[in-house]
Image (cartoon, rainbow, N blue to C red; front, side, top):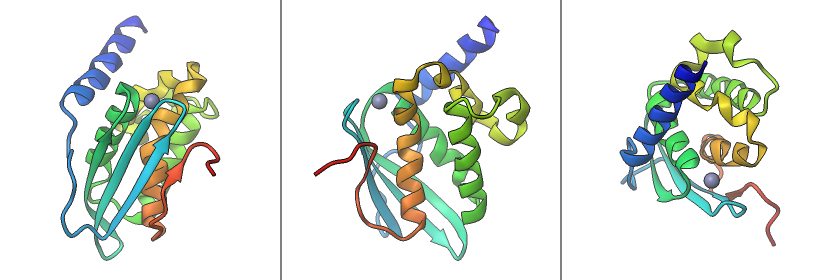
Length: 153
Ligand code: ZN
């Protein structure tokens, strides 16, 4: 288990240092900003659609290693997925990081997302890991409003 944990840590640090699909997207179909005031994470998620399918994902912004690597891994995983597939994955991912589902039973479905299974042990980090997904979810729904993990006035 320690080896696995180390491997997960490495994947997270790698995506934090070299985020994939990082940068603003020109001619995006959807762009939604997500903010996590508790940690200071803030990202804009850009989506380019092809009908019902996500053709391209990119993101811009800054935050902690967990939120940045989560956005980076999400951007690589959602490419080519349908809206329904993306929503299903978000649902499973959310349940894994909140400890509602056991990651070991969903490894195949999770793929690289499994690296965030350990987040369930750190409740304060759950919002960091799910922030990019909340913004993506909102973007898919066609919203342009900023998403926040906290109630903001
Ligand atoms: Zn964070």
